[in-house]
Amino acid sequence: MKRRDWLISLALTASLLTSAIAGCGSDEAATDADAGDGETKTLVMATSADYPPYEFFETERGEGEPVGFDIDIAKYITSELGYGLEISDMDFNGIIPALQSGRADFAMAGMTPTAEREENVDFSSIYYDAKNTIVAASGSGFESYEDLAGKTVGVQLGSIQENEAKEKAEEIGDITIESRNKISELIQEMKAGRIDAAIIEDTVAKGYIANNPDLEFSTIAGGEEASGSAIAFPKDSELREEFEAVLQAMQDNGELDALITKWFEEYYAEQGGDTE
Image (cartoon, rainbow, N blue to C red; front, side, top):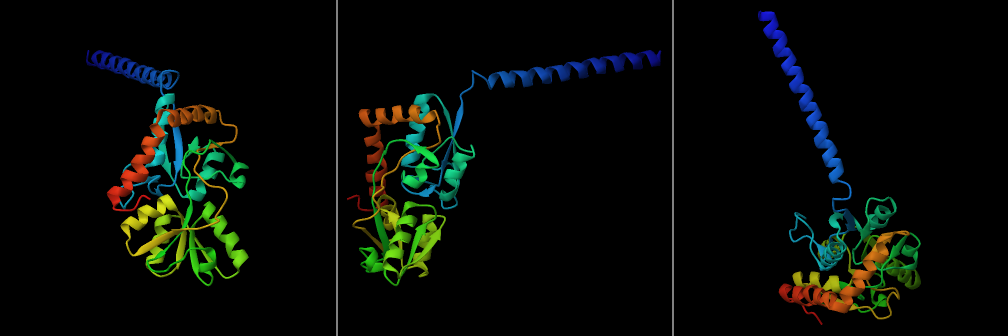
């Protein structure tokens, strides 16, 4: 009798186990089904979040999600197109390789569409224009590359500022170029006296100057011809046309102007900087 009870118990246990396994299989199938047509596709955006006000973390430790001009544009475009958005922060010089390897669907990082970059990725139209500046200690008075003769100059690795500075260094013949991964590193190097100046885009320089009154900047006359920021995509990506349509709509409906005001006027006003 006891043996029979044991066999019944064993049979019930096996039945329950089989049902549980079948249930798990059903849940997995449902999950797979949900990942099909009914689920919003999430796009990965590559950026380098050390470039305020384009993209940056509001905390020094880089906690939370980055914010900024590019982030707001990306959120608007992906929302309009019905995509989800995942932001992947990385060093600037790793962005194009991320697009080429399929680790990112598009990139926004205040990136200028130079001829060299266009060999490896496709770009949208320019959505914001800017100029290069020389950032240095207050009172330095640097206004041209010629003024930097005999000096050590910092640039961000992989940037158009790096290319321009290296070309000018070859022309002038007496400028030492030091490259760093992040703009914040250039500022730290200047304040520590290890470099004399840095070449930084004006919109970004304003934010750092607002927080570092011991520094100054001046626009470089006759700088790099290529200028302005555009969205980068892997070669032949279908997303380019989709994004371009929304980007043009943003220019027409005033949304882009509103974000420019938010990040290049109101943001600097809050930082105590000059927006002119």
